[in-house]
Length: 215
Ligand SMILES: C[S@@+](CC[C@H](N)C(=O)[O-])C[C@H]1O[C@@H](n2cnc3c(N)ncnc32)[C@H](O)[C@@H]1O
Image (cartoon, rainbow, N blue to C red):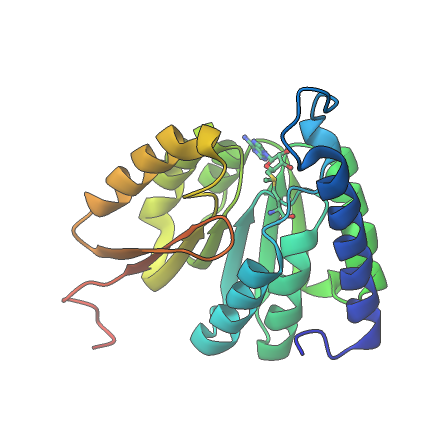
């Protein structure tokens, strides 16, 4: 069980109920389906990737976690729960004030808001304004922003930093951006990377330098 605290477990259950209702309404491909209101949907990483991120934080013990794409706070809940257990902090960024306000409310309900810095605005500008370093990054923003965000955050990665980038396999409409992102990552000599077929496809990238002073 991931959420051992009953308040966090209740927030997770509410997210799952909302995700199931949205999936029932918009998930099936049908000519009669209503147009998808992208900004009203959770668009969550899902429970499998959430559990993976939670385990990754517990195992790697990053000090500063950067989440790009708070949305309504689903993935933030997993990151913050793990961060609280190890004494880490989560910086989460999104453009939409009403989404972050909802995320903040849910994190307060879960008793986890104190480990999260909510930052509102354009991610590229906010990454540029942060001194870094980032020890673990979740990249789950609109897909055409993956490359500019990667270019902004790459110089601020800690030694042995980890990046998890979602939507590398699904949806099909994101594949061109996913390919461009994976090619940019693969071109960096200090990054090792692998595509994990979990959830909607996660590219897991680790910074690894032979001259790492910790070695
Ligand atoms: C797929 S959703 C994130 C889902 C979330 N990680 C989860 O699992 O619940 C992507 C989010 O990225 C945000 N976004 C898109 N472009 C952005 C930008 N340039 N700067 C900051 N946030 C952005 C959108 O507002 C949207 O909420």
